[in-house]
Image (cartoon, rainbow, N blue to C red):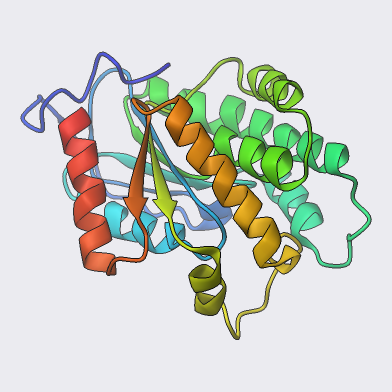
Length: 238
């Protein structure tokens, strides 16, 4: 676990650094260092819940004062991005559920070792668009794979790294689907509303099991209100 010792107050001594925008692989940095050891926040939810929009809002707010690293899953490294392309390509409809889970885990393992752990050691605030909970919700509740198998897989590919705070953006799957109307959908997004409903149930179950780490936000609210609620959770925790 990371960040339990840090980010106690926005007034903590900080180190000024030059802003930097790294566009490759979904990584963005900028702002100031938070502490010696960093803090890890993940954003979760079904497709169309607004994670990417919220992440961008958080970056614009937190990036002013803190040194923030933004990553996405699958992806975030050269290797992981190649796996992402394979997983989301609609032409790869024959990927089996266990294969899918292992590919996600492989991409995550590379991301943790190459990007997340070094960033946390440097004292950065890491914001991830998806992490371990997606595996349980999508491949477990969505695909029907054994949850214990997936938990063990998550442990293996992360070495036990768990977000300090997870913000779950909860929304009705029908509303989320309407938001994506007209978009070019990837392989997972094409699974439809029934699949997303099972995934949502998985997320809510995880929230019930880990209420201290996972905080549920009403993703049907406006971007401004959702950002306000997310920032409150972050500042209240750290």
